[in-house]
Image (cartoon, rainbow, N blue to C red):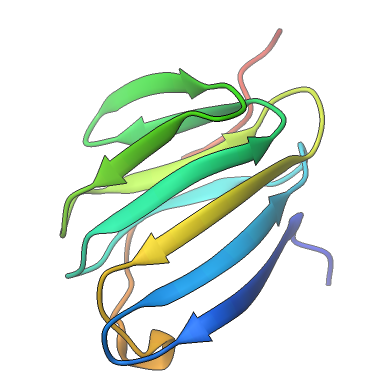
Length: 109
């Protein structure tokens, strides 16, 4: 099943999870939260970011810090976006993701 999201974990340790996500414009972001801080850096493309009820837009090179337990989601705009992510604790499989039931779709342009 193609969800429009591919992610690759590069470092997975008890102190940090670091990876790359490729987000296709068809991807529908599921708003979620987790008990660790996460940082995003947009490497390629443009994106729409939801954090705690507010929408912002990201361009290549932009960074953002998402505090622990802040509901958030990301979607790509017109073309695929490549996003670097860092979670402050790990390993990845031990991080509890809590989904709110809300979704974020690519805004009409």
